[in-house]
Image 1: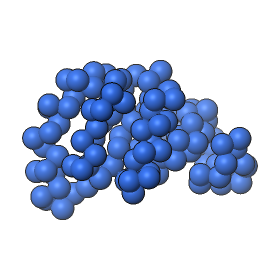
Image 2: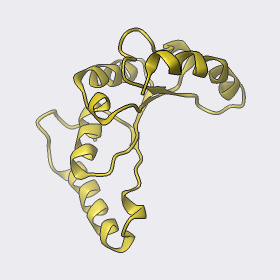
Image 3: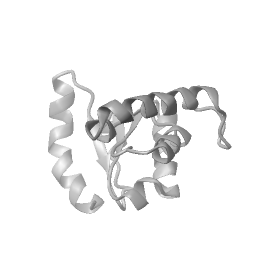
Length: 129
């Protein structure tokens, strides 16, 4: 959750990953909004960091900028309907979480209902599905 520490650790790996033909994702962390995204070296912006940061207006602005640059946006630790809606509102193209790992028989129908809702129920933020 430290953008300043994440950047120097990531930079040597981004070009190596891309050279393998794999899209390179950069894990944006708390503080990444302060000019710490290597836009020209990445294919995916991964909204990581603290829950407070990745659901913040700063993370939302980075997600919008990434989409304007033609990049995919991924949000990690999306384990609730609310967080899934936030990811949709931010324009995320993918998300992950452990929700299904805990009680899959109960949680799979819930998750499928959430996904259906994303595609059928408009949000205040417009249709990003």
